[in-house]
Length: 414
Ligand code: HAM
Image (cartoon, rainbow, N blue to C red; front, side, top):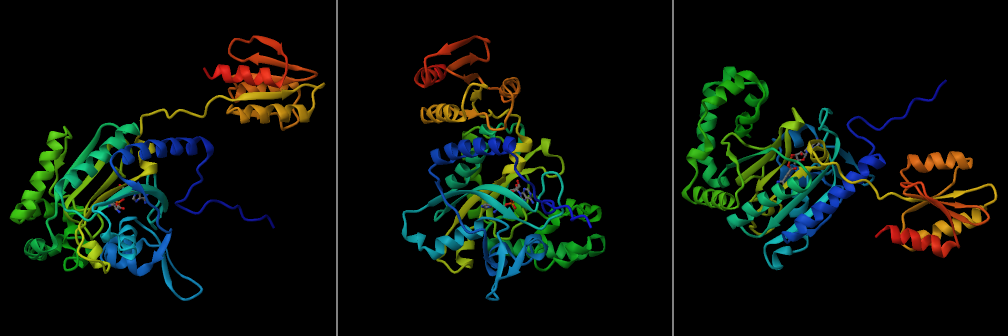
């Protein structure tokens, strides 16, 4: 019987070297942008107590209802592969008493996240996010700053022509009166709503704005809007965020139907979309979550942040990320020895030169072909002596030894 073919699980993928190089380059640019903004690196575990996401992300969200990879460990504890990074950052803030540090505490993270979604282009079951969170201040300049940093990151990543959608959900308390009004409206039009939306009228009526269902969309076109019912403080906060964005020359669309898929948001919410992504148009998004730390057992602490999908950034990017620098290739002629060649490649690397040595038993002709294929800038042919061949000019000449070969290679670096 033939062995079953093994493949990466559905919704996951290997990152092959060419793509991995782009990711490393994106990471470098990300670090530069977010570091300039005063954000410091942070990592949390890949799995957490299931309870964290139930409480943090919200029982009525798609994520908690049907997308979590949840399992029991040997000790009978329920654990979940993290579907997002905000609840873990807040858990960590509480656990480490970070409210005692100078506020706001600003961190950024980069890593794998897991959601059991229907896999398609731009939507995976294991994906990577870069994100930032700023905890401990409700200053509107933090909202504006975080949006600017995401805009700057997308620009540095070559993601152009994005649309920024912006709205405010108000604080939890001030939202209550509006939610009651929306529930009433939804119940009046119950017959036209999708089953999914109907089932969540009580728990999460805002999700109705996100529905794809045609009947629901028609109903929502006439629904009362939250932006019209914001409290004076919330309106003022939103106006200040917009003013700072206007001053910075960031263009945005105020979209009163923007609700986002996680329950913790209060006040500012935003999302960057790219047409290049097709159906999964969200490149990155986030907002303010002023009640989340308290929800997780900490002191009342405002927070704001966003996350962006690395795969989606790279899909939407127009940049040709630079590849690795061209290597020097050390070839071995019939009269040369493996020892001499290995000694030369080691000396080149010690001098900081990216270099490779023949390791596949090829003839000299085969080695020269291979050197062209890997776009070597020069080949050092080790025989009785060493010949140096410049692959761009085709010039070839003997050199006196390892030292001279290294000197030439370093000189080529300019
Ligand atoms: P989110 O909108 O659920 O927000 O995810 C942020 C980004 O992650 C999306 O815009 C998308 O680029 C990417 N993403 C999400 N799911 C997938 C998937 N299945 N496959 C590929 N990419 C995906 C959050 O996660 C919030 N924690 C953001 C936040 C931080 N809000 C405040 N602070």
